[in-house]
Structure formats: C-alpha cells, structure tokens
Image (cartoon, rainbow, N blue to C red):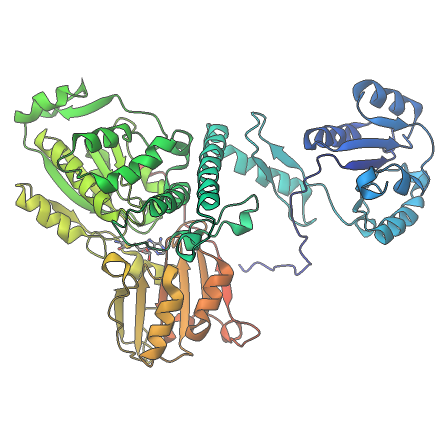
Amino acid sequence: MTTQILSAALPLISASFAEGETHLLIGTGSGESLSLTTRRLQTLQRSGAHAIVVNPSSDAHYKVIAARFPEVEVYNRPFQLSDLTTLGRVLTAKVVDRVYVNLPFVQCSDAKDIYAQCAKLRIPINTYQQPEHSTFNMLPTYTDPKGSGLQITVTTNGCGYVLANRIKREIINSLPANISQIVANMATLRNQVIADNNERLLKEKFYSADVGLGLGFGLDDDVWESHKLNTLIREFDATKRNQQTKRTRWLSQVMEYYPLAKLADITMQELENNAALQESNPLSSADTTENAASNTSHTDGRPLKIQKVEGEANSTVTVLEGDAAKQSHAKKGSISLVGSGPGSVAMLTIGALHEIKTADIILADKLVPQTVLNLIPAETETFIARKFPGNAERAQQELLAKGMEALKQGRKVVRLKQGDPYIFGRGGEEFLYFQEHGYEPTVLPGLSSSLTSTVVAKIPATHRDVADQVLVCTGTGRKGVLPKIPEFVPSRTTVFLMALHRAKLLTQELLAKEWDENVPVAIVERASCPDQRVTRTLLKYLPEVVEEIGSRPPGLLVVGKAVTKLVPESLVQFTDQRKHYIEEGYSDFEFDVASLIK
Ligand code: SAH
C-alpha cells in the first residue's frame, strides 16, 4: 500500500518567548463553557505574558475570570478596534503583542475586521476555528509538570487534532520515567560547559578558529551543530583549551549516544574524568579503575551493587562486589567478541542473544543500539565504552583492562560490538590482546552496517550490469587522517564508514583521483533504526548536502550506480535546483524476543 502525502503548506513551528508581552483575548466563547479561555489563561500565566480579556461573552464569564485570575485585566465591555493599539505595553507603543479571538457566533462577523487590522499592524492573531482569520495556532502541548522545561507538541497540520493528541500521548508514554531529571541534568551540564567556555573566550579575547568547532551552543537548537562536534581532534593534544573543547564534544556525544535514562546521573565530574582518562594510564592506574567503577551501571541508570558469579554445578550465586575476587580460582574466565548488528533487534543473531543473556559482565561499544542494550538482564553488570573523539585510544585501553580484571575473577565477559566485530571494530586487535593474555575469545559475527545499510536503503550492493563488486572502506584513518583513496571503478559499489564528518575533504580527494562527479551517492544514517534517514544525491553535491541536512549519527556513505537502481528515476534526477532526495524512517516488525527462545 502506498501512502498519499498531501502537499499542503506546512506551518512554521517556533517557540515564542512571551515574558512581559501583552496578549489580548477578545471574547470568551459561546455557551457556558469557559474551558478554552481558562486553559489559555493558564498557558499565558506560565509563559510570563500579561493577559487582558475584553468582551467576555457573558456576565457569568466575566465574574468567573475575574475571580479565578486576579492578575488578568478584564474589561466587561464590547471590543473596539482601538483596543489593539491602546492596551499594549510602552515598549511596543501600546500595540498589543498577540491576539486571540473567541467571539460568540452572533458576533463572528467582527472577526474579519479584527483580522484585517491585526494583519496591517503585524499582530499575530488566532481566531477560534477560523484558520482563514488566523496567522498562528496554539498547539496542544505537554509541559513537564516537574518544571524541567521539557515541552512536547505534535501537529498533523489540521489533518487530525485527535490523532495528533494521541501521537503526543504515545510519545510521552514511551519516555523514561526519569525524563525530568534527564532534561534538568543535561541543562545544568550544558550551562556549566557554556559558562566555562564563555569565561575562557573572554579571558583569551581572541576567538581562534581551531576551538570554534566545539562551541555550537546557544538557546536556539538550530546552532547546535552536532555534525561539527563529531569532528575528530588529534589525540593527546592536551592543551587546556583543547580539554575544554573536548568536554563540549563529550557532552554532545553523551547526549547523542548514552542510554537516555542514564543521562539523569551523569556529572560534571564524569565529563572531567574523560579528560583525566587522557592523562592517566588505565592499565596501571588505580585511579582510573575507580573512575570506571563509578561508571558501572545498568542502562536504565541504576547503580550496580551486586555481581553475579557462576558457582559450582552451574548454580548462580550473588555476591557483593569485592567478594568476586575470592571466586577467582573456581572457574577460568571466558570471553566472547559479539557483533550486535546495525541497530534493529531483528538483525541480532541468535548466538549474540544467547551471549547477552548468559554474560556476567557486558562491555559494550558506545554505538550498540538501545534496543539491544534493553535485552541485557537487569542483574548483569554493564559497562559502556567512553569512546569519544580524542580519547578513543585510552577508552579502548580502559575497556581491555576491565575485561582482563573480570576474566581473572573467572567471569564470563561479553564484549558487545556494534555491527560486525571485525569490520572497523578493532575486533582483531582485541582478539590478539586477550589471546596473548591467555584467554582466546570466541568470536560471533554480526550483521555489519556496511552491508545492511545498503539493504535497508534499497540499494542492491551488486546488481547485474550495474555493480559487480563491493568495497568497504573508511573515511577516517588512524588519528583522524584521511586514509588512502581507492581508485574509481564504475562498476563498483563503495561503502565509506566513518566518513560523514569529513565529507568535504573526502569528496575533494575523490574528485582529485578522477572519480566521476555525477556518480550517485547515498548518505545512510541510523540504518535499521526507526529514525533512519536515507539521502540520495550526486558526488559533486555531497559536501553541500551534508552541510544542509546536518547529521544523525551513526551514518555512512554508499557510492555507485546501484544507489539509484531501485528508486523511480524521476526522484533521483538531480540538478543544481534539486540536489537531493530524502527518505525517512524504517519500520521492522516488533516481536517478543522471549517467546522466540522458549
Ligand atoms: N563494526 C561496525 C562498524 C564500526 S565503525 C559494523 O560492522 O557496522 C562505526 C561506523 O559504522 C560509523 O561511523 C558508521 O559509519 C557506521 N555505522 C554503524 N552503524 C550504523 C548504522 N546503523 N547506520 C549507518 N551507519 C552505521
């Protein structure tokens, strides 16, 4: 079944800062019910706007409003057009800031005049149930009652108010119970980092280009340029300024990747610890082990106090941390390197699921999707790698050290890796490391994003007469340097992982190596996740398109003629006027994992 998309003009949604403004309510509706007006007055109260009501629809309405909202000015008289230019504040030369019309049916003919006058004076106006006499609409909004500042609203652009409300409720219900703490905590950290950065900038007086990348903060989310924050910086370049820039990036990465529920507990100290991680050697430093331990918690943010240790005859005993060490002679530890696929639980192998369910401790990559982390039993100790730009090396060492520690205690360690462990996942290095230390890992393959992203993006990686070979490579070499550029083969599909943050440089290099500038390219982001996005374009437009659409990590690039093979030609005919084509979303079937492994 295809969905027909209606092509109505979409309203521009924005947040209005109304504190101190004067908002005029004309009329209070027909009939006895005052509910719309009271809801509006409550909303205005929260926004800090000063509300004035003129022309209440009845004496009864007048009395109720005057009694319930003592701070609201109420004029129990007919509305006159001059009210628009006399009841406002001094700052706006007495012109009111906003108008809401809700007149009884008999007076509705006035709506046209009010609208015309408001339009002339540029006053935003909403007329109840008359879109033709409105320049804005109030959206039903959920406001966090705990005051975190979180607000959620949904609009279907008039296609179904009830449906929009239902969708909004579903969204709210799917949020973690501690969402208020999450928002509040992230706001605090963000403000601290901004304050710190501002102080630094003031101190230094000059804004130098190399630190500018990390400072995409502001009130407006439009300036939160996370794709720039993902830019790699040289490791171990630990000047103070760099440290602060790193903290900014870590915070953005933490917000992007950490399990949502855990964000409520992250502290400034932990951000600082990431910086500390740079300086200390985790393999020998007791200090870092302590830091790591403080990070150990479940994906829902609960701190862990107990560990599970396999006792004799396969029974499971629960012991307090520390006692685990005493069990070390009972059993030799074991380790598996497990691929967790690109995102969707449907792409997890049965073997991987088994390992997740039977582990004593799980050491997970930052990119392992939340849906997969949710399968980890509540009592299993879980540690998520703190691998952020600039400290990848140290975070890797920290993870290996944690693995060794658990192995020496005789525990079953599962190293959960995103996609396939051996495709740009340092799986080979980890294999050698544990083997050299006397614990040869079992390796379980996973579906690699490199070859599943193509499938979910409707790209046949090989296709007769179009592509007879596939190359998987990276856009980021060691220490952030661009790797050797492959030659252009017209019949090849090339997948570049870790390449989006350097799309411009990569494109320049490819074109310099005589790649066809008109070869189709797909940017596949969050493949197999519900918020998957596939953007098709041509190589020559790639840098511009990446700049325009921003980033939704993780993402990769697919280059080759196969990219457009399964999409109607009319959609992928690109010109300077139409440079890209975007497809949003991925839905796979929901299923109950437990029922599958009975
Ligand atoms: N071992 C992983 C790759 C690790 S490198 C695998 O086999 O998939 C990390 C890179 O993989 C990211 O920078 C991104 O380019 C790519 N990637 C991982 N998951 C992805 C996803 N769901 N959608 C798109 N790209 C993804």
